[in-house]
Image (tube, rainbow, N blue to C red; front, side, top):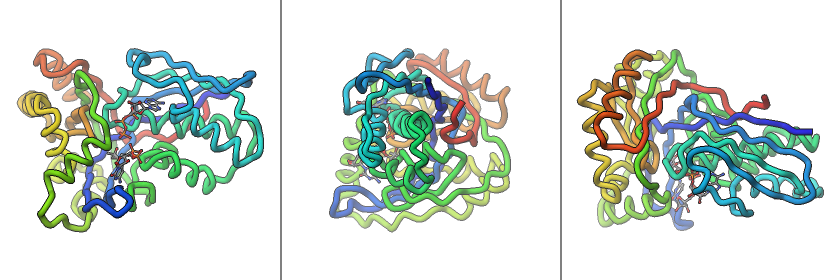
Length: 297
Ligand SMILES: C[C@](O)(CO)[C@H](O)COP(=O)(O)OP(=O)(O)OC[C@H]1O[C@@H](n2ccc(N)nc2=O)[C@H](O)[C@@H]1O
Ligand SMILES: Nc1ncnc2c1ncn2[C@@H]1O[C@H](COP(=O)(O)OP(=O)(O)OP(=O)(O)O)[C@@H](O)[C@H]1O
């Protein structure tokens, strides 16, 4: 028997970052939007725990027990006193190390899939608790839609979204390490006053109304200066997207994927074509959000 779970990527429409905490993490006001780019995680009974992966970025995905999907299976098995012997196959479409929570998606997907395969019957609360242990972005991969993440991003409050938002994503050549980008944020803000992170009321209203112009005027990412400092050529990609007519252009999460908010699906095609022609990125994808969270197929 097998179970397959589909899990979306995310874009951060607002990422407000506070000062580093004593534990090294940063308090956030993290407005997540799930978008329709998906990984599919399939789990099948097996003699031992193993992970395989297919897709254009598969070569960059660890297949040992450091894989977030394997860690999810191990945590669930341990809590329920059972063997973690399962074959986890990841069909990966979310860019790796791109700031779109691809590894987090696989962690949430494997958790939901193993819960279904093993008949564990874990409550939503327990699944969310395991997700938070796996990583700050993992709970959101489970719930999808749109949500405000506080704490280190793991405490979620669902948000209403009054329409569909269309996006273009430009994938960069190479990745950025999330800890390195937060470290660069610390370096760039050292000695200054880092305010408490707050969600923007105007941005939340724009999401609730489905107002793309208002959302474009309010999107923000406090990690963007750090990502650009470590990956300066992203400035050229952002400029190419803006010149092609994107309503807003920003680094997605910790980068180096860049995200472009556009008016509709036709505009997405136009901006995607211009970005491909610009020679400033490795590949270009379009997707709309909000998208559903981890879903058993
Ligand atoms: C950049 C974002 O993707 C925005 O959604 C997230 O904040 C990162 O979430 P993630 O990849 O799930 O991160 P985690 O696996 O929890 O943490 C990886 C590393 O990122 C840094 N980190 C992460 C989250 C946070 N609120 N503050 C941090 O400083 C820490 O150095 C941590 O060791
Ligand atoms: N299932 C997985 N898929 C991809 N990477 C994984 C996975 N499990 C662990 N990793 C490791 O995590 C690193 C970050 O990959 P990931 O694709 O999650 O980055 P990201 O999308 O930038 O994350 P985030 O947006 O949550 O900060 C990879 O370089 C890889 O070593």
